[in-house]
Length: 269
Image (cartoon, one colour):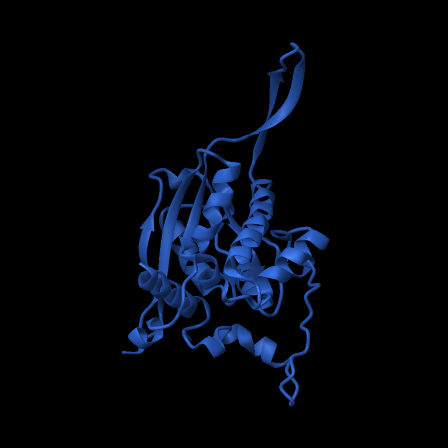
């Protein structure tokens, strides 16, 4: 099972990072921006990460940053973080992103009666929402969604890369039958190039899901991926915790406890 887990994570990384499965080039085409920040002596210069959401249009929203959010992002990027701590703090950040993503869903007004008999004017979710996770790292966000919406239905999409051509292709998709009539929370934590998400959205659109009904929930996104997605899908809403030139591409492997040992050889063979 661990070997299968690792293979899925590697294939996912290959698609998202522009066809490269080598650990040293996981940023794919998005790595070009980062390389410009490296001086001749090879010492990394801290990339700018105070990017404003106004640069990407009104449909891209960044989770309001405070010291707590920054600490969570720091722990998840730290190579010394243990897997148990990584999963714990990842789940905390996922919960914050999911909560804010749910805030993008439509509400309707309602009036309820309190235990004392008083009337209260409030809000309730409009019916017809569902989640869709992009396998496998997107599955890390499923529990956070279920913790907030107990009975919500969740579909899945698996995108992998052709070994010879490196072309991304969808190999599995399972949705509720009436997905075309639902608001979709599409879950994918790390976006370096946006390739995986583009393929997933194409599948949703093939199932007649309107672009404006999709809300993409994401943890870390590069400027390259953000620009690519808002250009390709201007009506889709995107919610992320951070736009930064360097994406933590180890997220899926660390969260699920997968290792690359033995898998890379299998892919090469």
